[in-house]
Image (cartoon, rainbow, N blue to C red; front, top):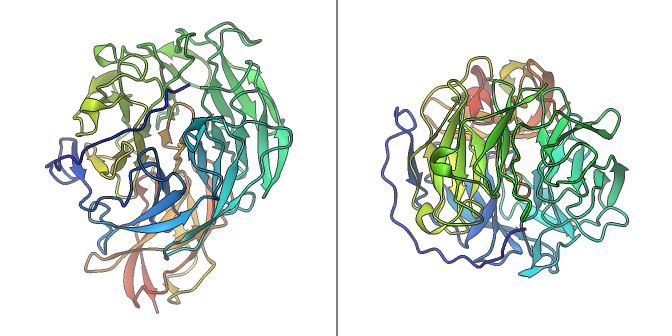
Length: 491
């Protein structure tokens, strides 16, 4: 469990850096500060970013960051975007963006929280946000009842299954539940360890869900156990044992886990300086974290070039933090450039999310967001491929259909130790005109949510009514990687 603190961060100087095309990774700061200190970040399906006011701000509130006319988030602008119900002001809670009919593509879900209005209560409250695309406030929130009999949800993990079903963990028991409709849940398999607390869920390409146990007692083994959830049976089974214990029994914290483009999961340790790699059949010990660093909770994101960017710390919730990259191509783990967030803050206060530009947004409960420009390059074979049904669309039209391969990507891309999920494995649709102006459509009602290679799916999309007629290049963007380009006309 994290120790609650109100974080005060002074405004820091901008980071000077080269463009995304630079060979050297670098950070740049957003030119416009958010109206309040923010933490959790979510990718809306019209290209905008939803951010929750957190810790320093009023945790009832949400804000939207809209990119500028050229698609730059660095030059983006903010607007207020609705508030949680008046009794729900959580810190450290579950989040997801809807992907299809089960949850609804126009729905954002938030569940539980370790804190509510600053009190450690492991609340069972939750809310559903209905998204109105292309507008502000843009999201309208309403209370969502918890699964029957659950007195707590707390700082718990979640996953969205291949058919789009949202699965929520209970922090403080071994129970899990599937979202059916507002206020209606269906029980599903319980994990074998005593409870879900401090573990995380990682979606695998075969449709299963992986978790690493953080309890020393359980039927899957002592201290080095993993488990696999099968959506077909709704049951958890014991996975292969880990070669190293990744948590400290005194706090049970765990680091982030990211499914990489080589189809292996990189799992960072918690309050121990260790990591492990899962290949679908077994675990092996990964390279030593740089400088003996740890990640007792904290964010990680998969870069288009295949590396994993992680925010690390030392010990249990200690500052300073540092950013590091795991490179699967040579099994190395090394420090990279830091942004100004780190000197006075630990790993767990950071939040990361890949953007459609291929940059990684990062914020530390402050009004200043930073963008990480990774080294250039895209791993071969991981980009989506689109198959348009036509090459002309009526301006402002809705429910257009687009077919494609790998439009959900091959990974959830972003992770955290347990709470604050920010998965981006769903298609965005981007239109660029001859002058470099960028417009996003609004995708919804995907046929599936599978991240299997060469998965064939379709998504429906609406066009922004303000988008002028003309000739555009159309792409799907998933996890910061663009598809093939198709020339289309908007009439």
